[in-house]
Structures are given as C-alpha cells and as structure tokens.
Image (cartoon, rainbow, N blue to C red; front, side, top):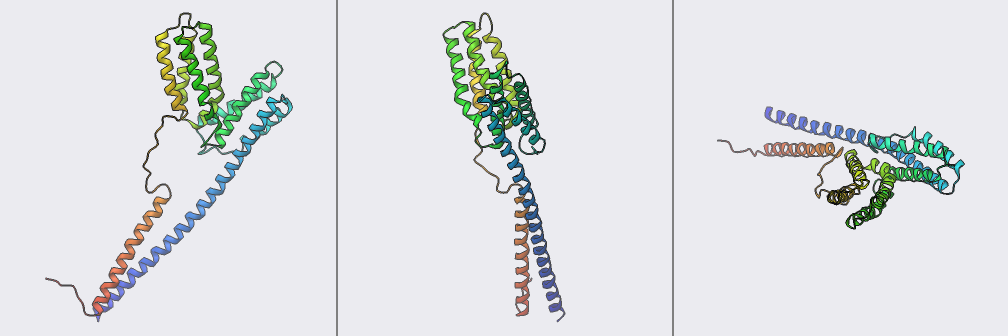
Length: 289
C-alpha cells in the first residue's frame, strides 16, 4: 500500500512537471510570436520608407533629364529630410550609408552649378537613383545591369593595348571605364563588402597611371586587365559560389527546436512512468537478480 502511494505520488509529480513545461513552452512561444510581430511591423515601416526614398530618387533623375532644376532641388530636399528618419540597421554597412550621403551632397552641389555643368547634374542624379534602388532592391538592383557595359570597357582597353594604340586613345578608353564605374560605385558600396570596393579602387588608380604613361608598359597593362576582369566578376557576383548546405536550425528557430526536443523527452519519460505504474498495479514487476 505504501509502495502504491509513492508510485502514485511519483506519477503525479512527473505529470505536474510535464504540465508545467508545456505551460512555459506555450508562454514562451506566445511571447516570441508577439516579439516577432513587433519586429515585423518595424521592418515593414523601414522597408516602406526605403521604397519611398527610391521613388523620390527616380523622380529626381527624370527631372534632371528634363532640365527641371526647380523640381530637382525640391526632390533633393525631400530625400534629405526622409533620410534622417530611416533606420539603416541591417540594411547596409556604415560605408554604404556614407556612400549614399555623399551622393546626395553631390546632387545638391550639381544643382547649384547646373548652368555651367548640366551633365554633372545628370550623372550625380543617376548615381543617386542607382544607390537608392540598390537599397530598395537588394536581390536585383539596377546597377548589376552595368556588368556588360563595364566588361565592354575593359575589352576596349585590352584591344587598344594589343593594337599598340597611342596614349591618348588609351586614356580616352580608360576615362569611359572610370565614368561608368563611378556611376555605380555608391550603389555597389551599399551591397558589397568594403574590401571589394577598395580592391577595385586600387586597381583603377594603378591602371590609370599605366594608361596615361608616355610609354605604356604593354605587358603590365595586359596583366592588369586580366586582374581587372577578375575583380569586376567578383564585384558583380559572377564568380561567387553559394554553399549548397543550409543549417537545419537558424536564428530564433533554434530555441523552438530545443524546446520541442525537450518536450518529446519529458513526454517519453511520463509515458514510461505511467507504463511502469500500470505494470505494478497489475502485479507485474521487472526481474531482478
């Protein structure tokens, strides 16, 4: 009778522990769900602000092409004000934010001297449009469409080198490459690692010196062009291999998976205790030596 009492007590304790665990699990999942909903709402607000920023930059670019300077100035003011209220946490790097800010300043300066530099305003507006689009569309930004343009620029330099063209021709072809790169640089800075941009910047600086030399070093130029092609492929993501393996549990799901596994163990122990209790009630005992 005493043994039966303790067996019942043990079963009640195990059952109570299981019930307590499931209660805590439900509360934890509920709290996590509420937290995730709050984060989702905040993220949706940030995404909406970034999309509006992108729309403003697109309109500004069109006004620049139409030589509507008044609308360009109004647009850059709205963009500047909107930028102050956007949280870039998790959106890009510090270098990316800095690149976007510099582009806005460049448009402001170009809008002031527009009478003497109309082309400069259009170029600056194009930079801003691509940078805003890169922020708003991380998976398929517009600046990636410049891949063929930049590759063609490299090929043009390579052809000029192989045909031993004069310094003036080499300098002209390099200037076109540099112009196209500078147009996409802020947008690339937003989505790429700073070291990738730094590598290409250093390559351009060195290549500029080689193409502008009175007696270009053909062998070194050919080597630099080959290296430049690799860096451009890297910048545009044409040679990056993504891992085929994905962790089974990532982020917040890891905790949920741990709780699930623990609950299975508790349930199994509870069931085993119950089976043992039933066996003892029916007079069935394990064999002991």
